[in-house]
Length: 421
Image (tube, rainbow, N blue to C red; front, side):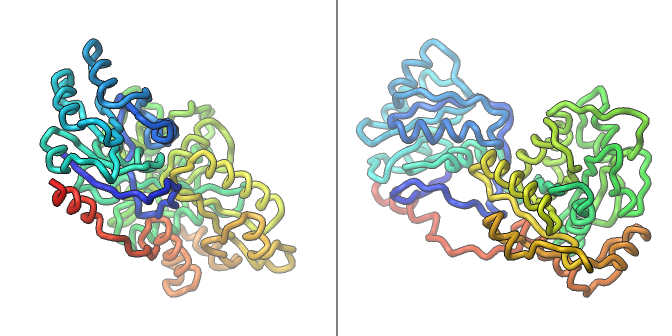
Protein backbone atom coordinates (compact mmCIF):
# COMPACT_ATOMS: atom_id res chain seq x y z
CA UNK A 1 0.00 0.00 0.00
CA UNK A 2 1.35 3.40 -0.96
CA UNK A 3 0.79 6.39 1.27
CA UNK A 4 1.69 9.99 0.58
CA UNK A 5 1.11 13.29 2.34
CA UNK A 6 1.26 16.59 0.58
CA UNK A 7 0.83 20.13 1.85
CA UNK A 8 -0.62 22.58 -0.59
CA UNK A 9 -0.34 26.37 -0.52
CA UNK A 10 -3.16 28.27 1.12
CA UNK A 11 -4.47 29.25 -2.31
CA UNK A 12 -4.70 26.72 -5.15
CA UNK A 13 -2.50 27.57 -8.09
CA UNK A 14 -1.33 25.78 -11.18
CA UNK A 15 2.35 24.96 -10.70
CA UNK A 16 4.56 24.66 -13.74
CA UNK A 17 5.67 21.01 -13.85
CA UNK A 18 9.35 20.28 -14.33
CA UNK A 19 10.71 17.73 -16.77
CA UNK A 20 11.66 15.41 -13.91
CA UNK A 21 8.19 15.61 -12.33
CA UNK A 22 7.20 12.41 -14.10
CA UNK A 23 3.72 10.95 -13.61
CA UNK A 24 3.03 7.57 -15.21
CA UNK A 25 -0.38 7.32 -16.91
CA UNK A 26 -3.12 5.42 -15.08
CA UNK A 27 -4.48 2.17 -16.56
CA UNK A 28 -8.13 1.54 -17.45
CA UNK A 29 -9.70 1.98 -14.03
CA UNK A 30 -12.90 3.41 -12.63
CA UNK A 31 -12.65 6.37 -10.25
CA UNK A 32 -15.52 7.96 -8.34
CA UNK A 33 -15.09 11.17 -6.35
CA UNK A 34 -17.35 12.43 -3.55
CA UNK A 35 -16.72 16.11 -3.01
CA UNK A 36 -17.99 18.41 -0.28
CA UNK A 37 -16.86 21.65 -1.93
CA UNK A 38 -17.51 23.01 -5.39
CA UNK A 39 -13.83 24.00 -5.78
CA UNK A 40 -12.68 20.40 -5.25
CA UNK A 41 -15.34 19.08 -7.63
CA UNK A 42 -14.13 21.51 -10.31
CA UNK A 43 -10.51 20.42 -9.76
CA UNK A 44 -11.42 16.72 -10.02
CA UNK A 45 -13.46 17.28 -13.19
CA UNK A 46 -10.52 19.16 -14.73
CA UNK A 47 -8.20 16.30 -13.75
CA UNK A 48 -10.46 13.90 -15.64
CA UNK A 49 -9.49 15.73 -18.85
CA UNK A 50 -5.76 15.22 -18.25
CA UNK A 51 -4.05 12.93 -20.78
CA UNK A 52 -2.67 10.70 -18.02
CA UNK A 53 -6.19 9.84 -16.92
CA UNK A 54 -7.32 9.34 -20.50
CA UNK A 55 -8.00 5.64 -19.98
CA UNK A 56 -9.63 6.06 -16.58
CA UNK A 57 -13.37 6.57 -16.17
CA UNK A 58 -13.78 9.32 -13.58
CA UNK A 59 -17.11 10.59 -12.22
CA UNK A 60 -17.85 13.24 -9.60
CA UNK A 61 -20.70 13.49 -7.09
CA UNK A 62 -21.34 16.08 -4.44
CA UNK A 63 -21.37 14.80 -0.86
CA UNK A 64 -18.68 13.27 1.29
CA UNK A 65 -18.25 9.90 2.95
CA UNK A 66 -21.91 9.62 3.98
CA UNK A 67 -23.03 9.92 0.36
CA UNK A 68 -20.46 7.33 -0.67
CA UNK A 69 -21.65 4.85 1.94
CA UNK A 70 -25.27 5.26 0.89
CA UNK A 71 -24.31 4.92 -2.77
CA UNK A 72 -22.36 1.69 -2.36
CA UNK A 73 -25.01 -0.13 -0.36
CA UNK A 74 -26.59 -1.11 -3.68
CA UNK A 75 -23.86 -0.84 -6.33
CA UNK A 76 -20.32 -2.26 -6.62
CA UNK A 77 -17.43 0.00 -5.64
CA UNK A 78 -14.99 1.26 -8.30
CA UNK A 79 -11.22 0.75 -8.41
CA UNK A 80 -10.64 4.09 -6.68
CA UNK A 81 -12.81 6.21 -4.38
CA UNK A 82 -11.86 9.85 -3.74
CA UNK A 83 -13.39 11.27 -0.54
CA UNK A 84 -13.28 14.89 0.52
CA UNK A 85 -13.65 15.74 4.19
CA UNK A 86 -13.90 19.29 5.43
CA UNK A 87 -13.24 18.34 9.02
CA UNK A 88 -16.83 18.65 10.16
CA UNK A 89 -17.51 14.92 10.27
CA UNK A 90 -15.79 11.99 11.92
CA UNK A 91 -13.76 10.65 9.01
CA UNK A 92 -12.52 7.61 10.94
CA UNK A 93 -16.03 6.44 11.77
CA UNK A 94 -17.02 7.13 8.19
CA UNK A 95 -14.15 5.02 6.85
CA UNK A 96 -15.15 2.17 9.16
CA UNK A 97 -18.69 2.28 7.77
CA UNK A 98 -17.40 2.57 4.20
CA UNK A 99 -15.28 -0.56 4.68
CA UNK A 100 -18.44 -2.55 5.35
CA UNK A 101 -19.80 -1.81 1.85
CA UNK A 102 -16.46 -1.64 -0.03
CA UNK A 103 -15.36 -4.38 -2.41
CA UNK A 104 -11.91 -5.94 -1.79
CA UNK A 105 -9.16 -4.15 -3.71
CA UNK A 106 -10.85 -0.76 -3.83
CA UNK A 107 -8.39 2.02 -3.05
CA UNK A 108 -9.35 5.15 -1.15
CA UNK A 109 -7.90 8.64 -1.51
CA UNK A 110 -8.85 11.20 1.13
CA UNK A 111 -8.73 14.93 0.47
CA UNK A 112 -8.61 16.62 3.87
CA UNK A 113 -7.72 19.91 5.48
CA UNK A 114 -4.88 21.07 7.70
CA UNK A 115 -7.36 21.08 10.59
CA UNK A 116 -8.42 17.41 10.34
CA UNK A 117 -8.43 15.79 13.74
CA UNK A 118 -7.76 12.27 12.47
CA UNK A 119 -4.12 11.18 12.94
CA UNK A 120 -2.49 10.10 9.70
CA UNK A 121 -1.52 6.68 11.08
CA UNK A 122 -5.19 5.96 11.82
CA UNK A 123 -6.12 6.76 8.24
CA UNK A 124 -3.45 4.36 6.99
CA UNK A 125 -4.66 1.69 9.44
CA UNK A 126 -8.10 1.92 7.86
CA UNK A 127 -6.71 1.31 4.40
CA UNK A 128 -6.41 4.84 3.02
CA UNK A 129 -3.99 4.65 0.10
CA UNK A 130 -3.31 8.38 -0.25
CA UNK A 131 -4.01 11.49 1.83
CA UNK A 132 -3.88 14.96 0.27
CA UNK A 133 -4.25 18.18 2.21
CA UNK A 134 -6.42 20.61 0.27
CA UNK A 135 -7.16 22.85 -1.42
CA UNK A 136 -6.22 20.76 -4.44
CA UNK A 137 -5.51 21.61 -8.06
CA UNK A 138 -6.07 19.19 -10.96
CA UNK A 139 -2.42 18.05 -10.99
CA UNK A 140 -2.74 16.90 -7.35
CA UNK A 141 -5.62 14.63 -8.31
CA UNK A 142 -3.80 13.31 -11.38
CA UNK A 143 -0.67 12.55 -9.36
CA UNK A 144 -2.62 10.89 -6.56
CA UNK A 145 -4.63 8.54 -8.78
CA UNK A 146 -1.73 7.66 -11.09
CA UNK A 147 0.65 6.97 -8.18
CA UNK A 148 -1.68 4.24 -6.95
CA UNK A 149 -0.87 2.16 -10.01
CA UNK A 150 2.81 2.96 -10.63
CA UNK A 151 5.57 0.93 -9.02
CA UNK A 152 7.25 2.96 -6.29
CA UNK A 153 10.66 1.72 -7.36
CA UNK A 154 10.23 2.76 -10.99
CA UNK A 155 12.40 5.75 -11.82
CA UNK A 156 11.56 7.67 -15.00
CA UNK A 157 10.45 4.48 -16.79
CA UNK A 158 8.47 5.18 -19.90
CA UNK A 159 9.09 8.89 -20.57
CA UNK A 160 7.91 9.70 -24.09
CA UNK A 161 9.52 12.65 -25.93
CA UNK A 162 7.92 13.73 -29.21
CA UNK A 163 9.89 15.78 -31.76
CA UNK A 164 8.03 17.40 -34.65
CA UNK A 165 8.77 20.07 -37.24
CA UNK A 166 6.81 23.31 -37.44
CA UNK A 167 7.10 22.86 -41.21
CA UNK A 168 8.30 20.13 -43.52
CA UNK A 169 12.03 19.99 -44.22
CA UNK A 170 13.23 21.91 -41.16
CA UNK A 171 15.44 19.07 -39.93
CA UNK A 172 13.22 17.82 -37.11
CA UNK A 173 14.19 14.19 -37.76
CA UNK A 174 17.88 15.05 -37.64
CA UNK A 175 17.36 16.84 -34.33
CA UNK A 176 15.32 13.94 -32.94
CA UNK A 177 17.93 11.35 -33.88
CA UNK A 178 20.87 13.35 -32.50
CA UNK A 179 19.06 14.18 -29.26
CA UNK A 180 18.16 10.50 -28.80
CA UNK A 181 21.81 9.61 -29.40
CA UNK A 182 22.88 12.03 -26.65
CA UNK A 183 20.24 10.66 -24.26
CA UNK A 184 21.47 7.11 -24.79
CA UNK A 185 25.23 7.70 -25.01
CA UNK A 186 25.87 10.63 -22.68
CA UNK A 187 23.02 10.30 -20.19
CA UNK A 188 23.22 6.50 -20.21
CA UNK A 189 19.45 6.05 -20.49
CA UNK A 190 18.20 3.01 -22.39
CA UNK A 191 16.27 4.59 -25.26
CA UNK A 192 14.22 3.70 -28.31
CA UNK A 193 13.72 5.92 -31.35
CA UNK A 194 10.43 5.31 -33.19
CA UNK A 195 10.26 6.61 -36.75
CA UNK A 196 6.60 7.46 -37.28
CA UNK A 197 7.01 8.63 -40.89
CA UNK A 198 6.12 5.24 -42.30
CA UNK A 199 6.39 6.18 -45.97
CA UNK A 200 9.46 8.44 -45.97
CA UNK A 201 11.22 8.00 -42.62
CA UNK A 202 14.99 8.57 -42.48
CA UNK A 203 15.95 7.14 -39.09
CA UNK A 204 17.26 3.95 -40.68
CA UNK A 205 19.50 6.00 -42.97
CA UNK A 206 20.71 8.31 -40.20
CA UNK A 207 21.68 5.40 -37.95
CA UNK A 208 22.99 3.35 -40.90
CA UNK A 209 20.54 0.52 -40.24
CA UNK A 210 18.34 -1.41 -42.66
CA UNK A 211 16.22 -3.69 -40.48
CA UNK A 212 13.80 -6.10 -42.13
CA UNK A 213 11.14 -5.35 -39.52
CA UNK A 214 9.97 -2.25 -37.74
CA UNK A 215 7.04 -0.15 -36.64
CA UNK A 216 4.75 -1.31 -39.48
CA UNK A 217 4.97 -4.91 -38.28
CA UNK A 218 3.66 -3.84 -34.90
CA UNK A 219 0.89 -1.65 -36.31
CA UNK A 220 -0.49 -4.24 -38.69
CA UNK A 221 -0.06 -7.24 -36.42
CA UNK A 222 -3.41 -8.93 -35.73
CA UNK A 223 -2.39 -9.45 -32.11
CA UNK A 224 -1.71 -6.84 -29.45
CA UNK A 225 2.09 -6.36 -29.38
CA UNK A 226 3.68 -7.62 -26.17
CA UNK A 227 7.18 -6.89 -24.87
CA UNK A 228 8.86 -9.88 -26.49
CA UNK A 229 7.26 -9.15 -29.87
CA UNK A 230 8.34 -5.48 -29.85
CA UNK A 231 11.86 -6.46 -28.73
CA UNK A 232 12.20 -8.61 -31.85
CA UNK A 233 11.37 -5.61 -34.02
CA UNK A 234 14.02 -3.33 -32.52
CA UNK A 235 17.30 -2.71 -34.35
CA UNK A 236 20.26 -2.18 -32.03
CA UNK A 237 22.14 1.07 -32.73
CA UNK A 238 24.35 1.29 -29.62
CA UNK A 239 24.44 -0.39 -26.22
CA UNK A 240 21.72 1.98 -24.96
CA UNK A 241 19.92 2.94 -28.16
CA UNK A 242 17.52 0.92 -30.31
CA UNK A 243 15.46 1.82 -33.35
CA UNK A 244 11.92 0.95 -34.35
CA UNK A 245 12.32 1.83 -38.01
CA UNK A 246 9.79 2.95 -40.61
CA UNK A 247 9.42 0.75 -43.71
CA UNK A 248 10.01 3.81 -45.98
CA UNK A 249 8.00 1.99 -48.59
CA UNK A 250 5.11 3.07 -50.82
CA UNK A 251 3.71 -0.44 -51.22
CA UNK A 252 0.70 0.48 -49.11
CA UNK A 253 -1.17 3.58 -47.97
CA UNK A 254 -0.81 4.37 -44.28
CA UNK A 255 -4.25 5.67 -43.35
CA UNK A 256 -4.00 5.10 -39.62
CA UNK A 257 -6.60 5.43 -36.91
CA UNK A 258 -6.14 7.90 -34.06
CA UNK A 259 -5.16 5.12 -31.62
CA UNK A 260 -2.92 3.19 -34.02
CA UNK A 261 0.19 3.52 -31.85
CA UNK A 262 -1.36 3.29 -28.38
CA UNK A 263 -0.61 -0.39 -27.80
CA UNK A 264 3.00 -0.03 -28.96
CA UNK A 265 3.67 2.96 -26.71
CA UNK A 266 2.03 1.22 -23.73
CA UNK A 267 4.24 -1.83 -24.24
CA UNK A 268 7.47 0.17 -24.55
CA UNK A 269 6.64 2.32 -21.52
CA UNK A 270 6.82 -0.79 -19.36
CA UNK A 271 10.46 -1.51 -20.13
CA UNK A 272 12.14 1.52 -21.73
CA UNK A 273 13.22 4.60 -19.74
CA UNK A 274 13.13 6.94 -22.73
CA UNK A 275 11.14 6.75 -25.96
CA UNK A 276 11.86 9.39 -28.63
CA UNK A 277 9.17 9.80 -31.29
CA UNK A 278 10.17 11.19 -34.67
CA UNK A 279 6.79 12.64 -35.67
CA UNK A 280 6.27 13.62 -39.33
CA UNK A 281 4.98 17.08 -40.22
CA UNK A 282 1.34 16.35 -40.94
CA UNK A 283 -1.92 16.96 -39.10
CA UNK A 284 -4.22 14.02 -38.50
CA UNK A 285 -6.01 12.31 -35.67
CA UNK A 286 -3.05 10.12 -34.79
CA UNK A 287 -0.36 12.83 -34.98
CA UNK A 288 -2.39 15.08 -32.67
CA UNK A 289 -2.97 12.18 -30.28
CA UNK A 290 0.74 11.30 -30.28
CA UNK A 291 1.78 14.87 -29.51
CA UNK A 292 -0.84 15.52 -26.83
CA UNK A 293 -0.07 12.17 -25.19
CA UNK A 294 3.71 12.68 -25.00
CA UNK A 295 5.40 13.55 -21.71
CA UNK A 296 7.55 16.22 -23.36
CA UNK A 297 7.39 17.87 -26.77
CA UNK A 298 10.01 19.61 -28.90
CA UNK A 299 8.93 21.66 -31.91
CA UNK A 300 11.71 22.32 -34.42
CA UNK A 301 11.45 25.48 -36.52
CA UNK A 302 13.51 27.46 -38.99
CA UNK A 303 13.67 31.27 -38.52
CA UNK A 304 11.11 32.36 -41.13
CA UNK A 305 7.53 33.62 -41.09
CA UNK A 306 5.76 30.36 -41.99
CA UNK A 307 7.65 28.50 -39.27
CA UNK A 308 6.85 31.25 -36.78
CA UNK A 309 3.13 31.07 -37.53
CA UNK A 310 3.04 27.26 -37.43
CA UNK A 311 5.17 26.97 -34.30
CA UNK A 312 3.02 29.50 -32.46
CA UNK A 313 -0.18 27.66 -33.46
CA UNK A 314 1.22 24.28 -32.43
CA UNK A 315 2.61 25.48 -29.12
CA UNK A 316 -0.63 27.26 -28.21
CA UNK A 317 -2.75 24.25 -29.11
CA UNK A 318 -0.54 21.87 -27.13
CA UNK A 319 -0.48 24.15 -24.09
CA UNK A 320 -4.27 24.26 -24.11
CA UNK A 321 -4.61 20.51 -24.55
CA UNK A 322 -2.10 19.72 -21.78
CA UNK A 323 -2.78 22.27 -19.00
CA UNK A 324 -1.20 20.15 -16.25
CA UNK A 325 2.01 19.36 -18.15
CA UNK A 326 5.25 21.20 -18.63
CA UNK A 327 4.79 23.57 -21.62
CA UNK A 328 6.10 22.24 -24.94
CA UNK A 329 9.59 23.40 -25.92
CA UNK A 330 10.93 24.60 -29.24
CA UNK A 331 14.30 25.10 -30.90
CA UNK A 332 15.48 26.98 -33.95
CA UNK A 333 17.38 25.04 -36.60
CA UNK A 334 19.63 26.03 -39.51
CA UNK A 335 20.08 29.59 -38.29
CA UNK A 336 22.57 31.88 -39.98
CA UNK A 337 22.14 30.48 -43.49
CA UNK A 338 24.11 32.72 -45.90
CA UNK A 339 22.08 35.17 -48.00
CA UNK A 340 18.78 34.06 -46.45
CA UNK A 341 16.64 36.69 -44.70
CA UNK A 342 15.79 35.45 -41.21
CA UNK A 343 13.69 36.37 -38.22
CA UNK A 344 16.10 36.86 -35.32
CA UNK A 345 15.93 34.56 -32.31
CA UNK A 346 14.86 37.51 -30.16
CA UNK A 347 11.96 38.43 -32.46
CA UNK A 348 10.95 34.78 -32.73
CA UNK A 349 10.96 34.44 -28.94
CA UNK A 350 8.95 37.65 -28.51
CA UNK A 351 6.24 36.38 -30.85
CA UNK A 352 6.20 32.89 -29.29
CA UNK A 353 6.42 34.37 -25.76
CA UNK A 354 9.14 31.93 -24.73
CA UNK A 355 12.81 31.38 -25.47
CA UNK A 356 14.07 28.56 -27.72
CA UNK A 357 16.05 25.91 -25.88
CA UNK A 358 18.65 26.04 -28.66
CA UNK A 359 19.51 27.83 -31.91
CA UNK A 360 21.35 25.32 -34.07
CA UNK A 361 23.58 27.03 -36.67
CA UNK A 362 23.46 26.17 -40.36
CA UNK A 363 26.39 23.91 -41.31
CA UNK A 364 25.72 22.16 -44.61
CA UNK A 365 29.11 20.44 -44.72
CA UNK A 366 28.92 18.80 -41.30
CA UNK A 367 25.24 17.84 -41.43
CA UNK A 368 25.51 16.69 -45.05
CA UNK A 369 28.52 14.51 -44.24
CA UNK A 370 26.72 12.97 -41.26
CA UNK A 371 23.58 12.25 -43.32
CA UNK A 372 25.48 10.66 -46.21
CA UNK A 373 27.63 8.54 -43.87
CA UNK A 374 24.81 7.41 -41.60
CA UNK A 375 26.45 9.08 -38.60
CA UNK A 376 25.48 11.38 -35.77
CA UNK A 377 27.04 14.83 -35.37
CA UNK A 378 28.81 13.62 -32.22
CA UNK A 379 30.55 10.94 -34.31
CA UNK A 380 31.71 13.53 -36.83
CA UNK A 381 32.93 16.05 -34.24
CA UNK A 382 32.64 15.11 -30.57
CA UNK A 383 33.64 18.56 -29.31
CA UNK A 384 31.68 20.68 -31.77
CA UNK A 385 29.34 23.25 -30.24
CA UNK A 386 26.37 21.64 -32.03
CA UNK A 387 27.21 18.35 -30.31
CA UNK A 388 27.12 20.19 -26.99
CA UNK A 389 23.78 21.73 -27.97
CA UNK A 390 22.25 18.32 -28.59
CA UNK A 391 23.49 17.15 -25.19
CA UNK A 392 22.01 20.21 -23.48
CA UNK A 393 18.71 19.64 -25.26
CA UNK A 394 18.79 16.00 -24.14
CA UNK A 395 19.30 17.12 -20.55
CA UNK A 396 16.40 19.58 -20.68
CA UNK A 397 14.00 17.13 -22.30
CA UNK A 398 14.79 14.39 -19.77
CA UNK A 399 14.91 16.65 -16.73
CA UNK A 400 18.62 16.01 -16.21
CA UNK A 401 19.60 19.64 -16.72
CA UNK A 402 17.07 21.66 -14.76
CA UNK A 403 17.86 23.25 -11.45
CA UNK A 404 14.98 23.19 -8.98
CA UNK A 405 14.32 25.40 -6.02
CA UNK A 406 14.64 23.52 -2.75
CA UNK A 407 11.36 22.66 -1.14
CA UNK A 408 10.40 22.16 2.47
CA UNK A 409 10.60 18.62 3.73
CA UNK A 410 7.70 16.50 2.49
CA UNK A 411 7.79 14.80 5.90
CA UNK A 412 6.73 17.96 7.74
CA UNK A 413 2.96 17.42 7.29
CA UNK A 414 3.36 13.76 8.26
CA UNK A 415 5.25 14.68 11.43
CA UNK A 416 2.55 17.16 12.35
CA UNK A 417 -0.12 14.52 11.79
CA UNK A 418 1.66 11.96 13.95
CA UNK A 419 2.19 14.49 16.74
CA UNK A 420 -1.48 15.41 16.69
CA UNK A 421 -2.31 11.77 17.36
